[in-house]
Image 1 (cartoon, rainbow, N blue to C red):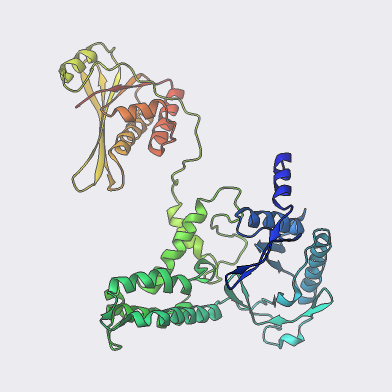
Image 2: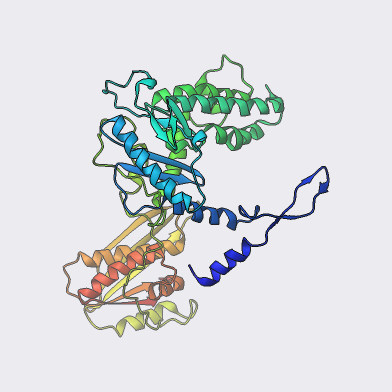
Length: 469
């Protein structure tokens, strides 16, 4: 850590004062010598750096996993027997406590919880918890429980999350009850306001930490459907005898399974775009786990079809050759562009390849592009042509670059000998991007990747501005 930063942190935590205020009266500031100043964004960062020193370790075995969030620590230990797992947990805890003595940190035994997750086929699965060997931390016995709560998620020993879904449904009903006075049947706030409150308040509480416990199991959704349908009935004001399918549709809500998969998929997409150094990696299929276990790879199964192809990469910069434009025979779009272009074509040597590309957008927003490849021999002889649709999300600029990519892909598969190639484009921005892709545009990078391969095959590629072709 730089010296100036150490000095700044020292000054930040030196000569701090604290005063209490009550009933519009505030006492005189008093000095305090522990803790961090409250209200500063740097305080939680300093606490994380300080507390992380207690949990640092040089070896990370596969059977011992530690995760921490602020001041909550979760220690996972796998072993053949409970007694062996308790011994390893006791050793790990003792190491952390010894390191914490020098930092003034310790664990809160009163808040410590213990959960045994036993295999379904284990003979100890259904025996009393008191029959298991005890775990002792700091001369205190930690009794095992059937379920624990970590970061707002209720975890049961069977890992079915049925207890959590029951609690989630109860929390959703509680929040909905606090809003019931706003709307009753068709009276009160409009239905669209109730719909907004459902998405931003009720469901936000109800589906907290959803990707951690939603596995697609029907037993999970059956517990949540009662509250979900009650919210839909509150939005619409319809009676109890309304069919559930009509109720959900008129409330402008998706079926609960679809909505939960949508929220999980959004989280999975975020995981795929995390930096490589992030602690939470993208969803992966674990080859060493049993494939017949239900819902174990739910996040991966939701997002695997999105990553079968190459995702847009705005980070990786490829070392490709830029395409240098030649001077266009046309100064503008008005002064006889066709005649000037034909005169320029007569100056080209035989066997020269001329590619015309174009991109366009319809009034309804849909875009597409086309390309045609000629060879001068000595007149222009058509070699290939093509077109494609790019949907309503691409811009005209994107279609121009994609046309170049498709045309150069055709050259990579042609049997013609290498030659000089001129790509005629009527979009100056596309020409500039191909000459210097400083923004790392995806469509330009794909086109430049093809052009680089053609350069290695001794093709010479140039671009030229050709208006209104």
